[in-house]
Length: 243
Image (cartoon, rainbow, N blue to C red; front, side, top):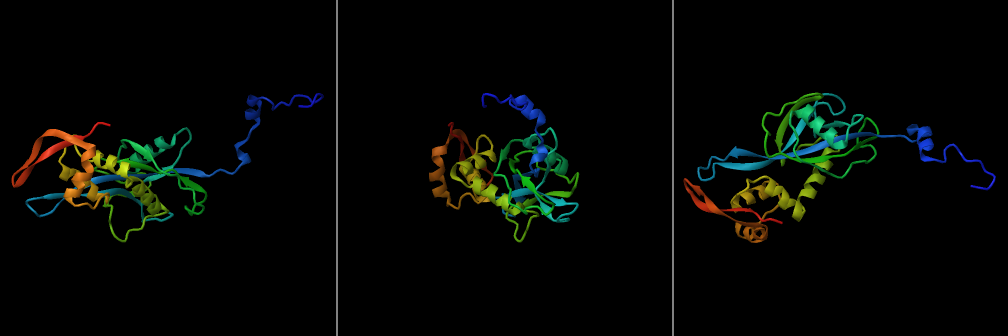
């Protein structure tokens, strides 16, 4: 300030904020979208291995425009006073009836034109569902909610949700993330065959059993005891090695 200048009313922060208007800059709408994944059991018809587990994603059928009738990730708009995680939990509950456990933030989506309604940013989350997956139902502006096979051919999701899903899977398929994901889907003690089944279901590994055992052994330790019988050779139980 020059020697003869008078102090401005906006020289202190409180005065600046009191006169500041958010209308000075255009603002986008913000949404939270949820990539919810689980494993579902299905019969095989083979008495030696009567069930197999397949990766599934939770989708909603849109009840209104745009993309009316198309499948999409659950999600919706941020409301005043909410955090993004609170928004994700609320939208998942309202549209599917599912209560989220841990939510992992993914990279935001801000590409112009990603939503035909206007300037809308998406802040997606990954949700790993290990319990309470049954009984989802469509609610709010979702006409239906269903677990659909992750590898379902020919499916195209609304908006840029295919890209959001691809980004979530790419993150999960990193070496450390892949291990964390797999351990989230097995009990505290497990067989190496059970753990490998999770890796195969999510496309995290294509190793044969011998190579898989060799690669995973640095991350597991014997838990004592076996699981098997009724036509199965008993298999040793393991647990995740403490970090």
